[in-house]
Image (cartoon, rainbow, N blue to C red; front, side):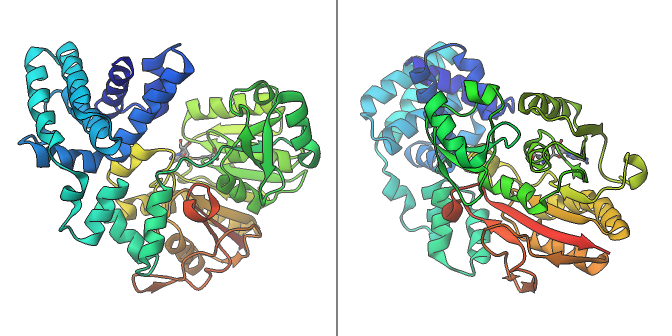
Length: 447
Ligand SMILES: C[S@@+](CC[C@H](N)C(=O)[O-])C[C@H]1O[C@@H](n2cnc3c(N)ncnc32)[C@H](O)[C@@H]1O
């Protein structure tokens, strides 16, 4: 019961208090053993992913409406119990008994009776019953734990190809591997694999980017080799954005929306720590993380500037940049594999796109006036935040699209009747194809 109790506490911190999943798990687990943490993580991630199906099962088996249950503990206890018995196939009477005891402990005697009544009802319904007679999109949304609007959206992204939609939803439920970006300042990417294996017991395999490896065995993040700055942890798709900018040693680079610094540090390594990177972000806390990261990796060429990037001009910068990276906050629809709670938050894509445009526009002005190379990237899979933004940049500014120059899939040529002629120059990364986050990268040249 201990693990379920911790999971319920973490779920309450996440849903009712808005804490990020890793922080909530960390807080409830404290220094408990690794097996406990793993079990709590499994409860938490699976309950969040399958929230819609769990709630449908609760509705089908009882009169209860999960969204209206006032006690945040009772709501999560019902979901965890339903997950255990209906999705994991654990014996129903034992699960119900455990959840009733939990409810009494966390929310009182009456809550225990309520949980008992609801879960006895849930015991009698089956997943297949709940799914049958529903339209295909709704069934898929429930089976793979996604909002239905996204299933419909993905169907348009893939021009009605149901198989690809299903592959994307399935991949969004699989945690991608950890990718280690070898720090060229400390380790040669070609011989690094052997050094990591021999001296640190870390087994990695190559990817299509020379400096990025996929972790196969051993500990990456937080390990001794990580602390010594031999590598950083960065998703392969994210590394493709910084690789696409490909700065040279001695250049001046402007990194807009730079915190927590995955791409800044990758750029610095490509520049062999020679030249200047101005890393701009509105979050001072985020920039502090970025500075710590630079120190760990032995990077000295980075200057930080804490400000809102909207309205940024060259006068705010120490020098005119040669290259610019813009990686604004987005809908994060590409990282639902790592952050499953994001899928249940509202995603007004047009509103995200307006914010992305307002951050990109000053950078476009600088690129246009000074002939800079500019890379625009997001971890979103939407059309509005990606191809549509780049198309507008090409229409309104004196910039041209150049090939992104990194491996990956082409962008979308067409979406809901709109067209994007430069689709083969930009790159998209799909969780089901590249085993990465969903990502978008476009490279422009000004003047
Ligand atoms: C997608 S994250 C950037 C990730 C970063 N490029 C990296 O590779 O680690 C977006 C960042 O934009 C910052 N941000 C949001 N609005 C901003 C604004 N108006 N001006 C500058 N930074 C902003 C956030 O603080 C956040 O750090």
